[in-house]
Length: 452
Length: 130
Image (cartoon, rainbow over all chains, first blue to last red; front, side):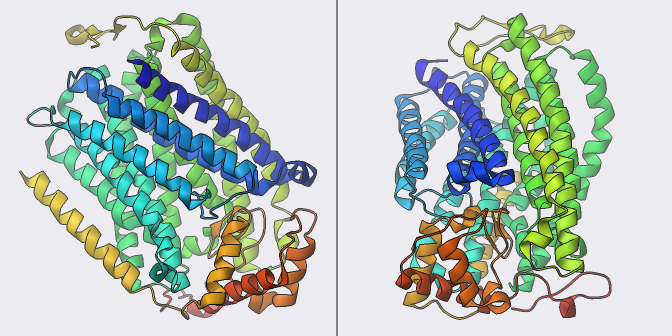
């Protein structure tokens, strides 16, 4: 890892810590209006959401840089990568300052003034230059994770540009078009960073297991194409309740239902994964990856249920949607990224750091389960009162929901403490020299993994 | 290589789907200058942090898709100007308030925030025609 890559990793971890801090403050401001009077919720929420989005994208891009450098046996990342890190970091700081100064763009998930999208775009183009320089050195028959990284890198650009289409007047001509821009681009953007993150998880699985087969062959690619179709077309389930064209809903529904295949495959693979987990139990990276797998299962099950129109009618616009978003970003993306960063920073060779990370992981996982269930319960109560009972007065509607949200806020403290316990040792390790090799246990064919 | 062919097919389907999704999203009236100014007021004050339109946005406050039909514009003006226990007062000018109300009325006219009972089939599913 060169200096630019170390700062890339540090930036990602600092953003995770900022996400936790802003999230806790936003949770308190949500529950206790007095806190909201001191620090406005309309500033805290975008600060939390932007920090979270940038933690995931920064962490995903840092993982791609590291793993592709290993996989392609490349020299260190280039100057365009260093320029990306500098401009990207500067843009994020400017965005947080804009929120503090009450300057907003007011778009869901991307609430900063649109002018600040320019340096974000420039930085990503530099990242792409670096990526496609590396792409020239790919193996002749690249494994699936190489395709996944590249798809994620390209689709992030496409979806970032797409979510800015609202600046062209035609796209704001009708509200349905305006709504479509937001749901379509944001839904697909989640898919874009998932490609980078899941690609990294697949890469790590092949390295830890010493078996490249899971990243090759027709089945692996068939599942990837299903995931890619999901990225491109599944956004429609977010606007079931809006008067949009029928084909959008039908396509999204068909794609969602095809994902049962993925769910069944995960269940079938669980037994082997658990056996492997016992064997490699002390490998930090593997533990985070298996934790993510559990959350893939839970979230996919929830997403599939939400995709049924008769249930979507009750869950749309409720905290069930937040549960899905939190389960995905914390349970899946953050767990994979922490596993990936543990691998990069060779945390298994730092005894105390490893123990802290393990305690943090357990605290985060159990707290997240309570957090996630509380959101689902809150959403179901709200959905029932709103849709079945027809209550329109917001205070009356939310009265029985608020106690459940207090459980959610308390559990949020547990999630934040656990993730901070996992992130801080990684941040400390990013300032230290790296050990030479990472031992991989009980696999005679690959007892050590050589690192470039 | 079959993977490249599938990838090319998906790419083409994505481009076509994008075109038809945006081109077909013509439900509701066109935005006039006042509605566009109201949209800018909505965005500049980051209303989406607390409120939803068609379920998109924060959950601190209510969904405002149908607020003009359900409560009327005087209600909206009072809430924006004076705030509540949870919502801060927003010192907008009269012209900005007019624009914001015009924007919300435009959204309201585009459809309903919740699926109406009349559109729900006995199986629980529903079809909404644009």
